[in-house]
Image 1: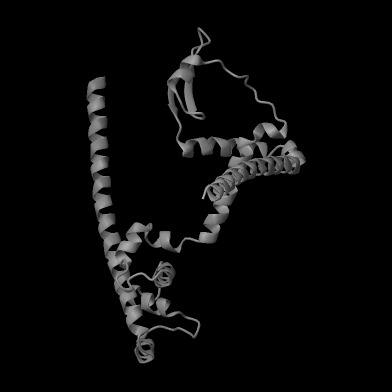
Image 2: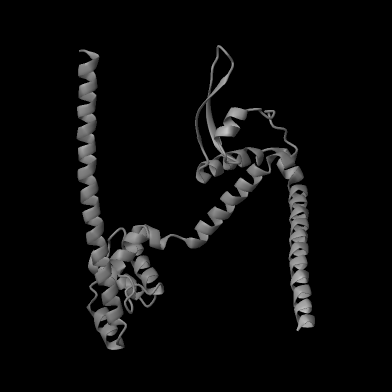
Length: 261
């Protein structure tokens, strides 16, 4: 079979797979829309029941499954709508509670369905914010370690490279450069560059994680932190001096204006 025929068959297969994925994606979006609409109805029903204790009491008496005093109204509603044994019932109840806490669907606020679409669906609105904050703090710390690599006394494997052509073409102070080594000439051939912050942070994280596995990190961590704090204090003092100078000039101008008057 010729290469051309093989290429054609591969492309046909890929097109078929892409078509299947498009079909699945369409069905998934329809399913999500239906789910969000159901949850919006659940939220409306929640608000209705909370208008009067008699409504809530009557509804609880109609629930055809076991529950106790610790079962939330949101759980009772989602179990009634999605089934008491629904695998994601707990997540749906948490989404309802999150919606109530955020005032969704109240006094002209965005509705439940739209709110879910804008915030990553059910999983997006019930995500543990504390865990997210902790993960971000850990990520930021690794970036910090990666950026201050040399302060820990670890020497770089590379010496500064004189590359006037690159400096002339790229204005960014910090960027990622993809190069290819020419094994015959020994030259590095630039292929692509970017200043994307996410990619740069990824490199710093990898660098930071590598350093955090070395003994020198534990030995010099306190020293490096103290050094950076001193530098920050010095910078703050310089800023304060500059602001004080501006303040003094303003006061002098006001005095001169008062004397002239």
